[in-house]
Amino acid sequence: MNPLNHVAIIMDGNGRWGIKNKNSRNAGHKEGIKTVEKIIKQSIKEKIKYLTLFAFSTENWRRPKKEIDYLFNLLEIFLSDKIDNLYKQNIKLKIIGNKNLTKKLTKLIKRAEKKTSKNKNLQINLALNYGSKDELINAFKLLKKSNKSINEKNFIQYLQTKKIPDPDLLIRTGNTKRLSNFLLWQLAYSEIFFEKKLWPEFNEKDFKKIIKNFKSIKRNYGSI
Ligand code: FPP
Image 1 (tube, rainbow, N blue to C red):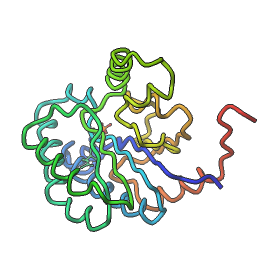
Image 2 (cartoon, rainbow, N blue to C red):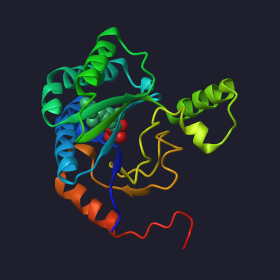
Image 3 (cartoon, rainbow, N blue to C red):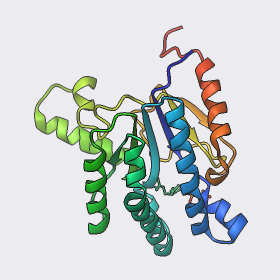
Image 4 (cartoon, rainbow, N blue to C red):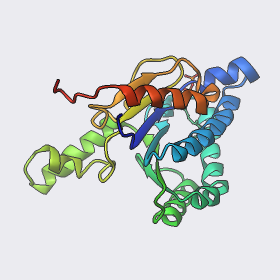
């Protein structure tokens, strides 16, 4: 059975769920928070050590301002209202992505990361204003500047995920099969599961089913 240490998730389908059920894309994002909470709880039960959630990509800036503002407001609420709860669950929160965000959000992120920095149960990496190509270019530049030799070991020190093992499993909900500029380096050997359900419909049972399937896969890493 494969050990499961790190799960990464592309939480896709909020907009479609919102339109279908409440005639509002933003209502789908709000509903998506409930799934986030369910999956966090289940991750702890499964003894998963790292959960990386794609909350906002560098490409999501192309969305209407009204939707972007709503999403950032949800993130602010999550980081202010839920942080005590995450702390109590012994969860460490880390943000990956380009941190040039609003003053309010930057302050909330700093506070949340500091408060939970010593927690050990589960590390949640929230990918916010994250784009893998940006991350890779930045890492190449830093490695070049350091004059260290160009090899894998030195390179990964400059990724935002340094000290975080690569995901064992990637789940993308929303019936779409693409990576959308998410963790392109880190997913090199991850098992990928594309889920038909939209993110707000996804639940603990679906998550458990994927984990069960993942555990039975023979992972070869290029060997036989
Ligand atoms: C993709 O669905 C989802 C997002 C861009 C945002 C994800 C955000 C949340 C689940 C809520 C905030 C999260 C946290 C952790 C506080 P989409 O809008 O692209 O859906 P669509 O493909 O149906 O349009």
